[in-house]
Length: 109
Length: 168
Length: 98
Image (tube, rainbow over the protein chains, first blue to last red):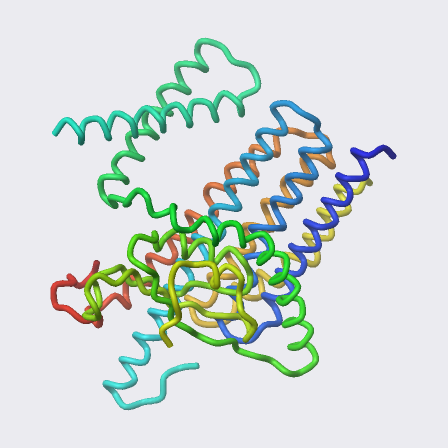
């Protein structure tokens, strides 16, 4: 196994580990805001590392550029989606609190 | 009037060039028909991007003050991924922690969108609300207000490098 | 069976079920994280399958998914936030339904 294969394998292991950590964190962490933090390692670390491993394996050329474009798209869209979901949950909670305050009942958890 | 036309032309041209170049990279064999299809589709995309720019009017120059936060980002990413793993282990052992909510007041001139994206990109912090400058009845001349949810009590290097301070 | 297919199988069996679980339980706005992470894991699975089975056309699937999955999640966010968007912020100049 030469250097290229070895580095591709290491990058692949790192990317897969980040994705599996994200999935486990999504399953286990309590509360909707905590689970938002699980999205970050997958999109900023996991998929770009996997794309980097595939690009290293493919060698220089068009295929590597395509893979890096996918990595860039996922990395940029990750924080945007995180903020959008966070804002939605925040507004839902605020609206539920307002509704509960107006009717005098307990807001849902 | 001329300045608006220049901005439109620059936006259209740069987006068209970017989308066309992406298309050419992704297509396997390039023939005249492919050129025409790619050029036309890239033009559609450029028109859509110009429409979005007109609707949202993103302010330019907000990225200048965020260089320090950008430089602190890789270390933050590595450290906070480890902290996320530690939080998962802590929860599995039966000591869950729902994190904390803080508000960060950015200085005027720092783009809130880019700052929020940098903060959210590392696992330790998530921006859950952005209030643009001038919307709340607070001090005029203040910057945007970010509501941030933190994973645990440890400080984030990106937040420390942002041009702003915590309010609560 | 090579390392790429092994990684793809590992991601499918261990990475997808938590996302589906989270997307099936809870209030509508709390299911969004499951959808978002499911899209990301699916992108990675497509890429690894493309290399593992030596079919380069599957990378196009991953490219389209990388563009459409965040867009879909943002559409869901917009739909869910539309009901809660009442003028509760200070200032009557903020139009309702904005």
